Amino acid sequence: MMQRRSFIKKTSAAGIAMALVPGITLNQEMEYSIVELMGKTNIELYGEGINLRKKAHDAFLSMKRAAYSDGIDLKIVSSFRSFQRQEIIFERKFITYTEDDEMEPLAAIDKIIEYSTIPGTSRHHWGTDIDVIDGYPKTNGDVLVPEKFESGGPFENFKKWMDENSVIYDFHLVYTDNPKRRGFKYEPWHYSYAPISKPMLEAFRSKNIAQLLQLEEFYGAEHFTIGFLKNYIQNNILDINRNLL
Ligand SMILES: [Zn+2]
Image 1 (cartoon, protein in one colour):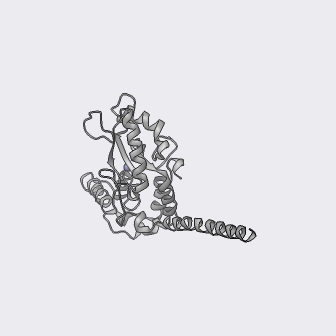
Image 2 (cartoon, helix red, strand yellow):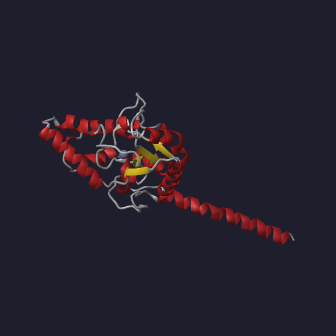
């Protein structure tokens, strides 16, 4: 009898030790690589027209089903975006502002970063963030316009629904309308899946991003100073909804 008891004790101790192993593995997986954080490598994405990491995809589908039963058709306008894609957007804007509009390079960059990120620093590189609207209302022109989400706008009901429900599914607005917030302007369409994007932001912060960006060779990057980049990281990357920090 005594022998058997001690055997059971040993087994359960071993069971606890075994149970710790998946935790250790999980922590290792949480160490995101720099190419992953900067959108420079392919990651596994799920769902046609969704393109998110598995857990974010699953949470989005649950949220989409719930919204649908309340008469809202959650429609993703943009989700994962690679470094190369962001580079095309940035360079096109830089050329338009400096050549067509004859702006000074630094003024052009300041204008770009009102709404667009410097390649390598977009949350859309992570497979956790979405630009989302309601697919039901008929609208003209650009959809990602703050006024369209306000009272009387086509996405008024969508915004109300998301305000009440998105956090249930762990999706949080990133660029809020808090007047004290600096960095990117208010984006009522941009949501982030916190359980993955929070550790990714933490990993991102642990890297010397300013130094890495100075080594980039895309058009306009030659004007980045270390001071500008440090301000950009402080304001545009870190001055966001505190639920995501
Ligand atoms: Zn976005």
